[in-house]
Every structure is written in structure tokens, then in C-alpha cells.
Length: 144
Image 1 (cartoon, one colour):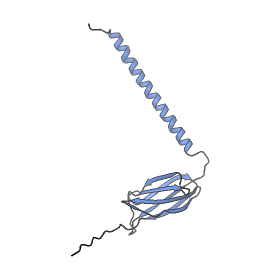
Image 2 (tube, rainbow, N blue to C red):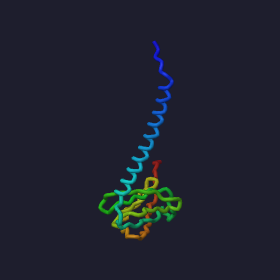
Image 3 (cartoon, rainbow, N blue to C red):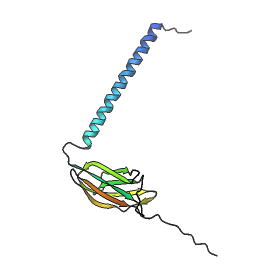
Image 4 (cartoon, rainbow, N blue to C red):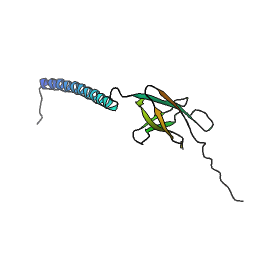
């Protein structure tokens, strides 16, 4: 026994599915914008003083290091942030709360020392140079 559905029902079903799909897309877009707005407003309340931390990562020979990861965290160890250097070894953390921060760089298995208690001041850019140590060399002694 086969069940036959009238053509009118199929058309109505297609229209309803299409309308539902459009409505769901609109709702998802609205919710996405709402979540983004809440996250951005919670991240930094209005009238909080901010500044910028910027600088360069250099290798042991004084050459800029492209693609290095720079980590910045508040000096109490909370709120870590990370960015990467550009082709000229430059990095920037723009519009962060004023306060004391610690920074270090990482590239190809090498970490710079932590540069501690660097101040971000309101409306100012603090420049920092991070230096990676020389790559470790391995020597093998072969007995005769």
C-alpha cells in the first residue's frame, strides 16, 4: 500500500521549511550579535584607562624574529594574553588596562627571559625589546 500526498501539502511544507530556515538564520545572527556585544562590553567597561605595549623580538645576533609568540600577563600572573610578531619582529598589545605586566617571547624552542613589571600607562605606548638566547649547540665526542 502506498501513501500519496497531495501536491498542495508538499508546496506548503517547502514554504514552511524555507520560512523556518530564514527565521532560524535571523535568530542565529541576532544571538551572535548579542553575545558579541555582551562579551565586548564585559571585557572592558567604559572609561577604564588603557595604553599600549609594543616592541620588537630580536634573536641573539640582534636580528628581528618574524612569527615569534609574545606572551603578556599581569604581574600577579593572571590574565595572560598572546600575540605574534610581524615580518619585522614587531608586536603590539593595544588598548589594555593600565598596570604592571610581564612579557616574554618564544620562537623555535627558545624562550626569552621574562621582562617583569613593565608599566602600561594611560594613553601611552610602552616600547620593549625582547631578546631570544642563542640556540643551543650540541657537540658529540666520538671516542677513537
